Length: 140
Length: 288
Image 1 (cartoon, rainbow over the protein chains, first blue to last red):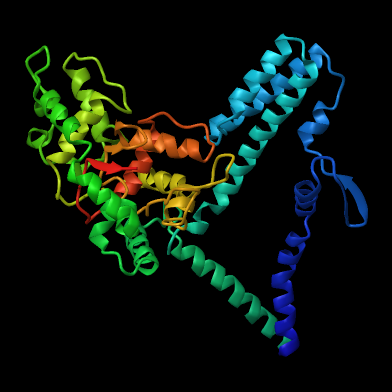
Image 2 (spheres, rainbow over the protein chains, first blue to last red; image 1 turned 30 degrees about the vertical axis):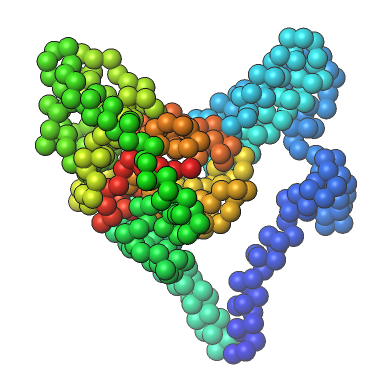
């Protein structure tokens, strides 16, 4: 009986422990503690704490690439706006990226567009999280 | 075999706990129970602030923080919204070009009716707010609509709230009306969902965070929100509508704010006002 209960408890708790050691947690911790690009180890392998958008913007600073990145940021922000979870600063960042593109500051444009796209992607993630978790703080 | 039975029992216990939790939740159109929400919210604040009187929650943070209350009571000796109420009365009683006026658009000539807003319009399939009907009244009588957030619309609304002081808030959720319930649920969901770059929900500040300092500010408890609008905020230096405040709060979480009177904000007002059923209208109010 005792063994069986321990097994049930273990089965119930396993997902919690797995979640605590998730790749995302390790990634976020490394980035928060050591900054963008920090190298961290997870499950015996090494990774760099770089956002998807930072990796995407790590290309040649040309007008064509910068335009492409700005367009991607705009599209992603449109997506999050339609979900009602657009962040406050994103439109301004996209505007700054476009200005940088106009003045030929392609690296700046790439980096700003990457930041805006990241904001939009996080807003979308927040939307999906809210769909299944919004009720957690409702008084019962 | 005995072990399998015991394990099945254990798993059953875990699952039944989760299922019964889901059944109590009231988070879907099938299960949402506005009255249970209202009682639960009141009980939550009774537990958080046992010394505060239920009827005093219409006074926001001043119901639970004595230092802020002292300052506010001094402000209320010469209410900063007084002139706006007088101007609102003049605007309310000024006839339109066609000879009609606001009184012709509302029940009881528009006097003492604030407590019934917002309401669910079955015919139009949407939540109607007082400000929305003020502008609809103007439009129907050939007048230009007013801007939503401040100025004349806030003054007319303030006068109408003034004539409704001490009336008991009575927001109706028509029975067997899925549309009304969906609007209520949408408002509730908006209130409790985290959003914006700061990942904050309305509830983070106004339920769990009520009377807990955010830098120099003390957020008010959710219970009683909406009863005192429009408000004269010291920060604005003028009157503003509830939806102006919603936009500001939305921005404070670093969200791109919705426009006043959008469906989402009206649904939020519907949910919040229902929570205040049984409390008294005390608008317009003065806030920091």
